[in-house]
Image (cartoon, rainbow, N blue to C red; front, side, top):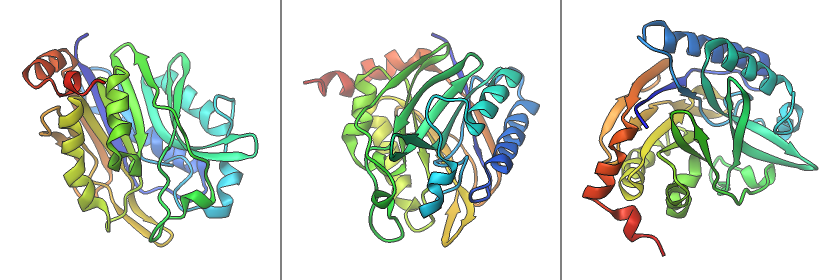
Length: 265
């Protein structure tokens, strides 16, 4: 396995306007590819990027079965084919009578997989347990450029979600987040720790701008298995980061500090 070319996009979106948010997604894909010498393998977007966060009772109006030919998924498949790229993003999933705060990955060949948020915050401005069901799986997805695990925002504060993905074979863990300015400093501290304890590369995609009563600073970032920053987007800026992830170096990281090996039960 060689290197992976990863992009993360952050931009203000419009609550409940799936069509407009997909246009914003395409603009960020174009920006990521514009000045890059080779094709981007994977681009990640924040938690509920397609629909917006804090829709409350209106989540049901934008929810889709996964996989399906829903509006959002159909358009993302078109974008993945057009730009020869894999897309990971947050979306509201409908399953029976339940809704889930989910992350989905779609590639040029179609649906790859999805993940349901396991830990739902229900404090301060957050009321996710009122609207979403709780996930219980930690899938890792095989791609041509490496094995990718996904988690969503608050999940990162529970180490078992990260170590579970690592033990399931993840090379890269994506955390898709809607972390407002009040809690973002905590992510600055915990993200490097999770990368170190899993010896995985970590990509953090956070919302930016104002959605309802919440303000998001973005500050999306990629860190290596030693917790060092590879690339980041400054506070409150709209745009993309593009970086090379040297997947082939994972073995040397893990040989030098065998945390993952020694944490196996």
